[in-house]
Length: 85
Image (cartoon, rainbow, N blue to C red; front, side):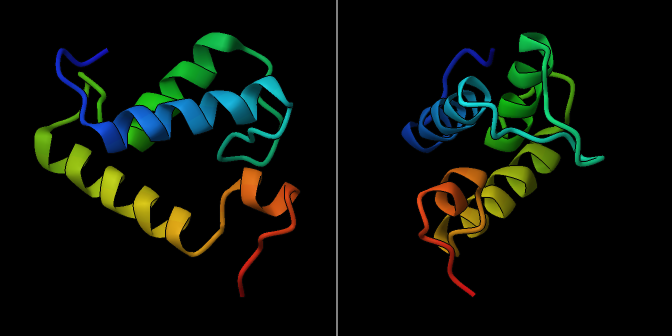
């Protein structure tokens, strides 16, 4: 994990891991994620806290994720019926 995560990044990692625990997390191909290691990698990537990505790419990932959360397009929001069109 990154040494210093912002509050937004921690919340995103928490949401993604929550989706994984409830079987809602999907990979980019559309299949359910079964591996905890893969779930952690997805969480860090979405939060923009990945060590393997450049700082610019991490900022882009975090911005894209925050837009997705604002528009209610996460698996958790869809499951709870908060889907916005």
